[in-house]
Length: 108
Ligand SMILES: [Zn+2]
Figure 1 (cartoon, rainbow, N blue to C red):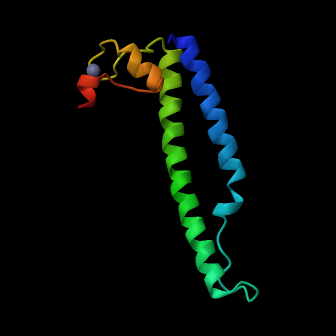
Figure 2 (cartoon, protein in one colour; figure 1 turned 90 degrees about the vertical axis):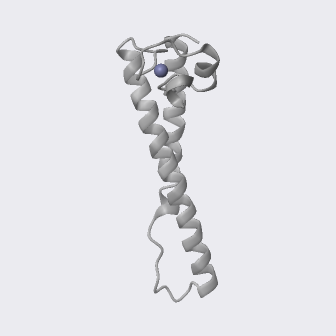
């Protein structure tokens, strides 16, 4: 895994997440509470669905922040080095997640 490969993977993931955020925007829209046509049960359903969607959206946002930081490190030529101790991060660890910011030692 070199910086170029990592960049490609991360840009792809970034694009997917951004697309998903756009697609799920409707599901996160505020639920109409005084809508006569929607019964109580389906309203509860809608709220639960919305809550799940919000949690998913939160995870997506966190992941996008991590990807963003990783892409900045790649641009700066720091790819593959731990942000804490500056040692090389193991290739297996980078292969598992190219956005990873620290080595195993600092992670613990
Ligand atoms: Zn480290």
